[in-house]
Image 1: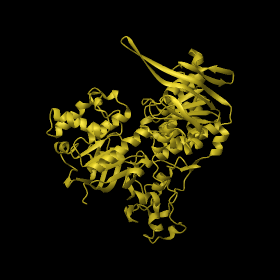
Image 2: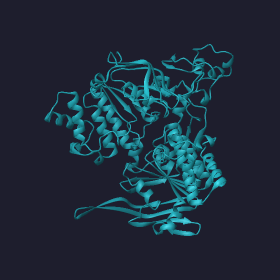
Image 3: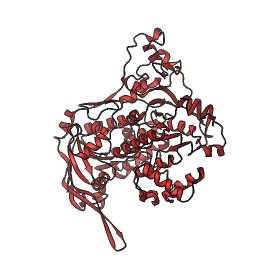
Image 4: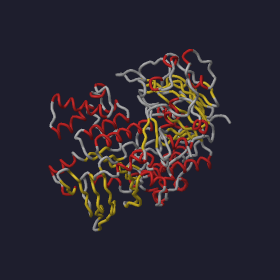
Length: 623
C-alpha cells in the first residue's frame, strides 16, 4: 500500500536573533500508510512535537524547515502556500493537541466551534451541521446535551473527547495525536485511546501518535519511531522492538516502564541530559549517556540503516548483529541484550513493611469536607471527601490513588491547612505534642506550614518565570530561617546538590524556561526542602514528566524519605508510580476510601471493583 504521508530528510532549525540557532529535527525520514498506527517516542526535548508541527506546517518563527520534503497523498506540501494548507487541514489531515484545557475557545459554546470547522470545509449548513455535530458526540460517547456547553463546563476527559471528535469531523485521512492524554487519569486515558482505536478500525484513517508515555504507545502502535535529540535512532515494528530492541536509548526507555503487579519493581533510568543542539557534535549523538559505547562512537556518526527488519543508527548494534565487521575497538562487545545497563531504582516489599512500623507523623480521623455554593435562594452542597481516615508515618510514603475528582487534592488542601474539615480532625504529631491542624491560626499556621510543604503537579507553573533559580530558593530561606549573606548562598547551593543539580553554578542564575521539566521539578522539590519539613505533600509530581525523568524524581523522593526520616503523601492516578514509591495505598472513589493496604498486596490482589478497574486501565504491553 502506498504511503499517505512521506517525510524525507527533514530538518527543522530554530533561528532566534539573540541566541545560537538550534537544529531541533535533523535529517528525519519516515512514511505512514493508510490505516497504520505509528508511534513516536522519546524524552521531552527530543523533537517529537517540532516534527509533528512541521508535518502539519504549523511551525512558527523562529522555526523553519531548512531541508527535506513532506509529501501528503502525492502532493509536495513542503512549501505549499497558506491557502492550500488551509484546505488540507481538518479535511485531510487533522490533529489533537496536548492540552485539552487550552485547545478550545473558552468563550464560545462547543457546538459553535464545531460549526466553524464544518462550514468552512464542507457544504453542510443549518440542521445538517447540527446533525453532524450530534453524530460526532455519539461517536466519542458524549451525551448530546453537552453540545451547547461552554468548555469550562466539561471535565478534562470530556474536553479531550471533544477535541478528538473535532479532529474527526471531516473524516480525515491522517490524525496526528500530540500527547493527547497527558494529565488525564488512567481510566479516562484508557477510555479515550480505546475510542481512537475503535474509530480508526471503523473509518480507516492513519494515526501518528506522539507521546512519552511508553506503556500506552507500545500498547497501541503497529510501528515505532524512537527519537533522540532531533534524530530517529531506531524504527521497528512494535512487537519486534518490545522483545529485541536494538539501540541502547530504546533499551533505556523500555527499562523505565514495568508491570506494577511484579513482586519487585526494578526500573532503569538514563543518566545525564540531552546534548546542546546549538553546538555541533562529533560521533553518535547519544554517546555521552550510552553504557555500551566504543571508541568509534566518539568520532564517527552512525548511519541510519536497515537491520533485523527495521532501521537503526548504532555502531554497537550493527557489530553485535553481524552487520559490521567490527575492529580493534569492538573487542569485548558482548551478545545483544534487551536491557539498559544503567542505574536502577528498586522497591521491595520488605522496605515497605519496615516503613509501616514507624511512629506516626500525621493522623487523619474521620474527615469529611462539604463545599457549599449558593444559587439564588438555594444552597448546593457537594461532598468532596467523606469519612476518610489514615495515618502517615515517619519514613513512609502513603499514596492516595483515584481518578480526577475523587477527593485527593481536597485532602491535600485540608492537610496543608488551606481548608478546614466539615467533620473529623487532622492531627499533627509534633515534637511539642499533638495538635489539630484546624486549630492553627496566623503565626502558628505559618509555623505549621514549615513542617508541611507541597510539591505541585506542574513544574512549568510552579516557579515564577521572572525569577532566577537561586532567587526562587532564597525566598523560603529568608522568610522562614532569616538567612543572609554567605550562609544564604551556602544553603542554596546545598539544596541544589541535594536534588542533584550540579555543578550548582550552572543553575543558580538560570531562569525556569532554561531548564528541562525534570530539572524544574527538582528545583520545586529543593524549594520544598528549604524549610526542612517533616511532611511533603506531592500532588501528581511526575504526571507531566517523561519516563526516564520520572524514575529519577521518584528515586530522589525515596532517598529523601529514607535519609531524612520524613513522610510523603503521594497523590496520583498512576498505579505504576504508586507501586514504585509508596509503602501503603489508599484508593479513593467519589470522596470515600474504597480500599487500602500495603502497596504490593493491594495491587497484586485488589478486592474492590473500582481498584480492579484502575488496574485494568494500566497499559501492560509486556503481558
